[in-house]
Amino acid sequence: MENYETHQSLFDAVSEGIILHDSGAIVDVNQSSLALLGRDQRKKSEVIGTSILHMLAKESHETAIAILDRTREKPDLVIGPVELVVKKNDGSYVDVEVFTKPHIHQGRNIRLVSARDITERKRAEAALRKSEERYRELFDNANDMVITIDLKGNITSVNKMAEEITGYSVEDVIGKNVSCLLHPDHFKKAKKMIECKIRGEAKTVYDLDIISKDGRVTPSEISSNLIFQSGQPVGVQAFVRDITERKLAEKELSASEYRLSTHIQNTPVGALSWDLNFKAIEWNPAA
Image (tube, rainbow, N blue to C red; front, side):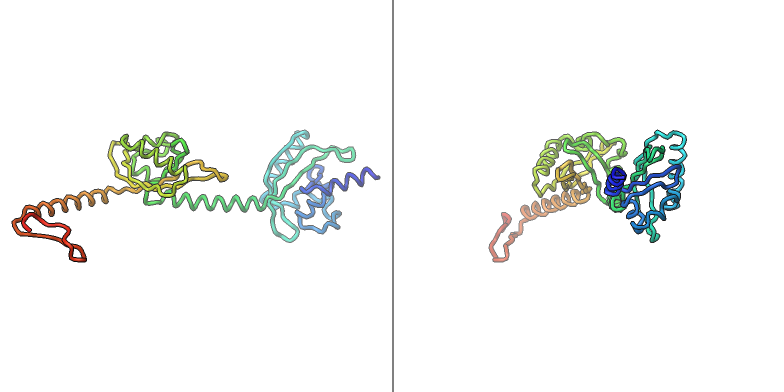
């Protein structure tokens, strides 16, 4: 009697739910299992003898039946982890992770099932998936090219705009060094900027020329930020903006200013300019 009481105390002290069943008929449950089910711990007898399927949501019945069938065919089989959904006494649901193995109870060969509440983990996983989906949507639909690299400069991901600008597919570039996308004259500059970012220097906005698959050169502005994992930098995410039109406008403005300056310098009419304090700052030979 004392050994039984000791065994029962240990059985009930286990934090995970423990269910003993014989071909699906519940033989015994511990207090943690009753808590999972949302049942009064003083009414264990209401659970004993019922089918293990009664404590599961309908969506988990097919999986549970398949496990019962397999363990009947192979009594020594250990199965798990398997995710199931438990239906509580109040109609709410709990996600659980279960393992099942053979067990001897009072001289009988039965099955032991351990069940752990993973509801919070499932919620966290769902939230993470949703966050990743939102990120992926923003990533893929960004107007700028977005590329991620590891600390060795190897490409780990690119978005759709990167494919459009470079002409390379995702499969073409993943795993390759980022130098395959850069003008050779800019290799050292890119490497230096990556090293600056890894050292934690905040401002790393710079211009580089991107070389597409067909050899076309795209002047680009690069801004980047570190990617962290467990508090440690593991890579760099770079936003690459096509500044071809800006470069052309700057070139045209420079040419226009040169033409105007040449005209002023060569005109026979005196011309001068001054600042807001009426101090002359520039004049031509005729002035």
